[in-house]
Image (cartoon, rainbow over all chains, first blue to last red; front, side, top):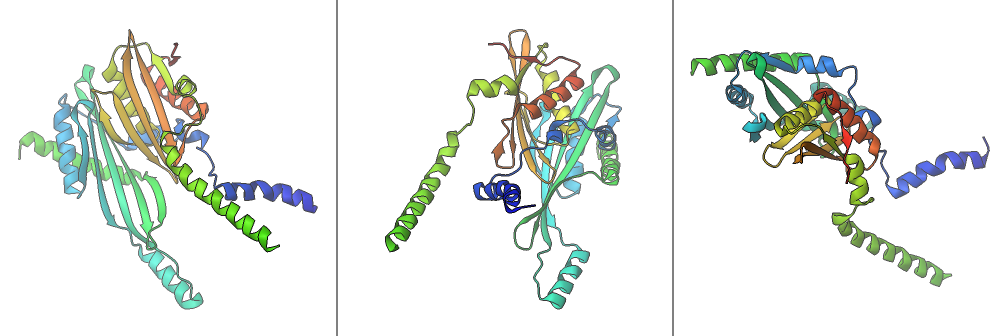
Length: 178
Length: 140
């Protein structure tokens, strides 16, 4: 590779840095993909009640149980959104940072704080007198230097299964009017 | 020689000052005309059922990995955010027009507006599957 070829390869990268341009939206961002169906199954349930309000109200109870603050509610659209700020320190990361500091004298920022967001959407299925519920969780993690270190959707099926166990209990209690 | 350096510094600072003023002009900035944007951001669906379209839009956004931030049935808006190593924020408006419903989506990818027709096409393909209705271009 001669000098000109090298320059040809590096030049766009340098131009990009100088102009501060970021890569654009990934083409698959707004596309249904093979994981969509599995994720939909994990994050939704249907309940034998035509009373959408009852499900929304039970959802609010569960979110409160889990320490979330309700941000928005839109009953006619079947929506509850909530969020909470929590500690994000992980033992392993801290141990690695301490090792780096001791061995190389390098300061490594570790995860510090996280904003967890949730939305619950209900939809009545009129013909079968059922209500469909779907929940989604996301989080934004910031490190000890105040930088965003993770920005992600939470897709662990166990997280969703556990949420629905809480919701089932809340719906049962709602029915009992406790 | 010194004069050259000074001139370069002065010119450089002027450019910087100019750049600062420009950041305010971003408030009403757009890279394309409203007509062009609408041509691929908006589609019309053969239904009068606004609630059905609202709920289908919410379901589609959830399928695409969004958390719904807000929804207003009266005004017909849904806002949602997708976090996947990036932040993609989207507003979808739903309004009745004659015997049809016009849906318009607009998205921001991190701090940039999404002005490429392809992601919107993908979104409407997903919405078509959810509604079993065809997304047609808005005429006029």
